[in-house]
Length: 83
Image 1 (spheres, rainbow, N blue to C red):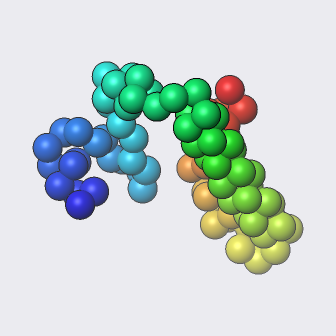
Image 2 (spheres, rainbow, N blue to C red):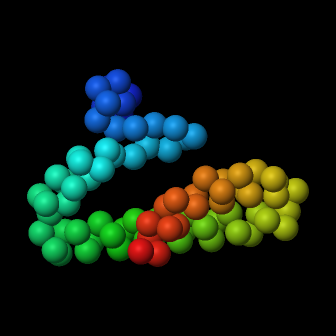
């Protein structure tokens, strides 16, 4: 289903990431009440923190290069979670 959304230019893809067009993101936000929005923001922040924690331990292990690459890819999510 996600690939169909990409083909229809409703979802953008690149570097193993997917994101909504800003106009669609704004429309989707308007459809949520404040409680639903807060819940989604909280879930995203927890997910980002969990992924950060999982990769942080690998920074001092043989798979360091892979962990650094995953953390680099996680940077946009961490910025969004921080905001």
